[in-house]
Image 1 (cartoon, rainbow, N blue to C red):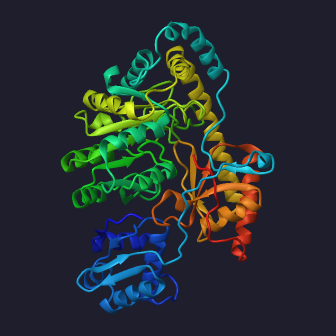
Image 2: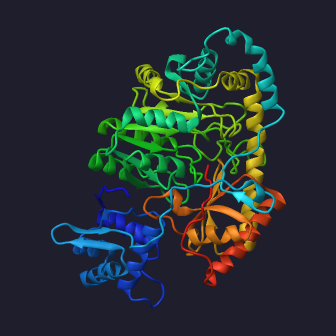
Image 3: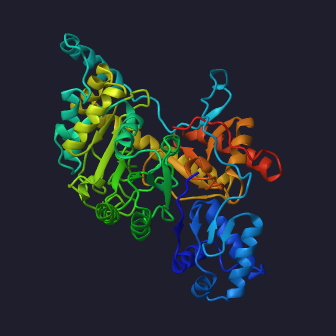
Length: 517
């Protein structure tokens, strides 16, 4: 569990409670409605575990209710197990003993069940053809020039570092090859950056929710995670909340996913990127920006990248047009050329998960330190795969594959949205502007129970708590946009049958052992 405790102001909690149904519209007593709304915020991850709540008098004034109402609401939360108090220290949010927390074991789907189970645990598409095979065919022609050497390139092949630098520059972030290190996938990049920036016991700020595998990696490395809630309805970050956390918690680093966030699909606008970069610079915190899905924007029906006819992609202005995509926000690092931002990317989401090539983009001095440290890790990445990625970038295969993927993901998203509206109209979601995932609110059903029951109905999904800390996001599921058409509808039908079983009292309180990617 994370151990950092932070305070929440009365005005901000009052705003959050207003979005969580307080005051209650029915005849529920106000104190009980207050407690239920706080519990909902906690379980959905909009309010973190370990957050110190305002004093009773302050919250009563902000809500326009009596202090007695707030005191009774706090006591109800204590009785339910969601609030702990100590004289002189105030009251802070907790989770009840025995509340389901996702386990660390993530088991892939057994091969003998692949034909009977629809696996929605992995957010990755099949390889794009014919572009991937063409890239490897060309890479084999390039290989002999490299087999006459030792083949050990800790920083990456020069040809790929140059191609990646050119790609960053085309996206509005001027970059030289000396600012790029090639890694074995984005997880390899993040592990290398973590080893350089933080030691066990250090605090690292993370979005809530965030990518499950990175959260687990940071936990296993002994870091103390400080959650910062994402905004509602894909609105991005809360700059004020980030400034407060960076000031009060003073984390060594912060891990963020600005582009088509996994799992929510959020695309953070330029002004919020600039605000976070400035706040991190002032606090001395290094921002680690995960750009693995930065180029997976959805096209729209008329091809201009938006749905409102203004041609801006519905995502703001300022970014460069690359590979036929509508201009979006500038890369986070473009808002701080001084080096506060370290960028991580990979070919695994944009192209193919089997292509385990990632990269780090940082200041040259940081790259040199990462390369030196690599001698004690994996030494380097496979040469043939690096040559293939370089060919994809140089020969146009990358952009062609992206164009196909954007169309496919948009169609898959539409298919899932239509099926969910038909099968589970009480569930809700915000349609993302890109990415690989749909973040679904389950109208109070346990995501952990749904995941366990879904496996028995032939569909595997990842429950919301995997993407939060200490069991948060219990009423969410992540649906990867990896299938479409009739397959997407059948997956939702199976999930709906599982939901009926859970609502009737079936299922368990234990998250299914789903392989998450």
